Amino acid sequence: MKRIEPYQGFEQGPIRPPSEAGSLLIRITRNCPWNRCTFCPVYKGTKFSLRPVEHVLKDIDQVHAYVESILNAQKQDGRAARWGHTSPSSSTEGHDGIALYAARNFVASGMKSIFLQDGNSLIIKPDDLVSILKHLQQAFPDVERITSYARSHTIARISDDDLRRFAEGGLNRIHIGMESGSDTVLKKVNKGTDKATQILAGQKVKRAGMELSEYYMPGLGGRDLSRENALETADALNQINPDFIRLRTLALPEGTALAKQYQSGEFVKMGEVETAEELLLFLESLNGIESTVKSDHVLNLFSEVDGKLPRDKERMISTVRRFLQLSSELQMIFSIGRRTHRISKLADLDDPIKVRYAKQMCAELGATTDNADHIVDSIIKRFI
Image (cartoon, rainbow, N blue to C red; front, side):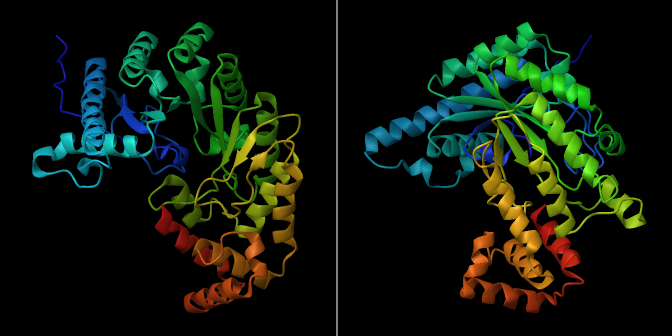
């Protein structure tokens, strides 16, 4: 007889996309069912599990009750409710405190979006997901967006009818970590999928009427596969035409298999200039699509590479080209200035004050054109 897991209270997982910072996080699975990608530090040492649907529904009810209390207090007070500004009291510690915090953040962000956690929520039974979506719609009927991570391998196995049911239930955006469209790169990093499956999954999401965010990781192929990483990924995305292409420049968190390969010399990580060259080739190779390119992560060097295709393609490309045309010293000043928040965009190099601050930071860190990439790597490790 199968043991029934007792309800332990409201749960939240460890990650969500940056674009979901204001979303209510509802955890329907724990961790990642694949969890073998060599570049990913998340979920290591954990076991994947499905949360009972009844527990998810209780989570929704709990956070809904807190939301209603906050909104009622705001109405009665005529100004921001006290709960919206204080930490959970001793009576709301633990799981209840997490639910209260989630409710506060949701209300403060306008109650516009909900994100389903963890790494591959669409792996649950279709009927169970529909039940959860229906409960969310009943609890929060004014929500504009419900989103989730999903693996291409999982989506490829879901019927088009079920995907349409999800869309009709309110699930209207899917985040897929494509990372690369190169079969060689995907195999090397143990992604557990291939280019054809990535394309199939993306096209299925689009056919179902859901928005699609695909993630590309410049640098993932290392120096040897940089060109292939750019061209094959662009080709896959050209066949999908996702709503969003989100850039996630490669970083090497300590303890990951890819970091160990780098330390042993098996993987040759590229520096800022080589990675920019790959990014340029990738952008130049995006054709015939209307995706929005987003550089919405601290790991990316160029915040300006952000715009709608094809309208903004040349503007985004020109940013990267300008960087590549700079002297080695200015490339160093920009890279370290950007990573230490002294500079935010390439145009800041025209601001003498910001350049002076960036030069001071380079001096403090002992940066030279020879060791700049090593220093940038050490800075980035603090971000991850």
